[in-house]
Image 1 (tube, one colour):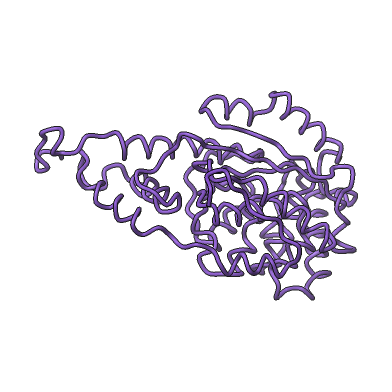
Image 2 (spheres, rainbow, N blue to C red; image 1 turned 60 degrees about the vertical axis):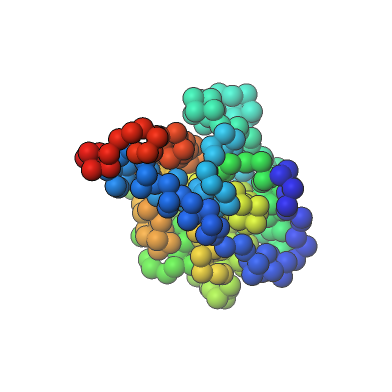
Length: 346
């Protein structure tokens, strides 16, 4: 594929299944090159801990060695949710559009984080004037609406990105994420449902009941992860899933943000083993369902800072760690070039 190529739009759910069936695997040659270089660096074996594995992971999924971190990007998708009418958020749906304006004006936390570590950022608001349906009463999206949102994600990725941090904004979307995760992996709704924007007491109990009601309403689709995403997710979740698929085909490693972002990618993991191997968890959020979901997916987060903001904030912070991993792997002298004896490195 050419450097700037993006994915072609899908026109049916069958097209998505074709994309999933043709996912490229890891670049073993690039991984082998990383394995050869790492023991030669002027340090004791394993002394940089997880940084060593992160550098290799980037090589494997970028499809080249040495790995690079010159063009990291963050993409945020925003959507509105009809389930908000059930009182599942401390904020009204209008805040979604207001926050998108704030992103575009450069006033949000994510803007400061991207500036601080030199990450390109863009926010894509998807039909905010048309919230999804209330998931306790109907499917969130028709197939056409789902595909349109999925295609927004497919088109947001290009091969020039070294790595992609994904995030979201959408009042009510922790409810959608909790319902989706519960439908995909089972268990009690209470185990997946958290405070989101700050609910507690009776408000949190109501939100948990809404999640339970939605999961039961859509249990007819329990064997189809993509249909569950259509029924229980939101436009921003569908777009994130599209971006994850596009990134795999374009050899762009992905850093997932918090609970909503991880829930959006989770259906792909159930469609094909290894579908999320090119994705890493940037952090574990304070939203309790995120811990449970990462365990179900076998993802070990890079950071644990007690964050629950969304916006790709945790994922972007993790990019700083990836940048450090690449700097060490590519910039350190080897024992031979530095004239240092390996026996004296400890």
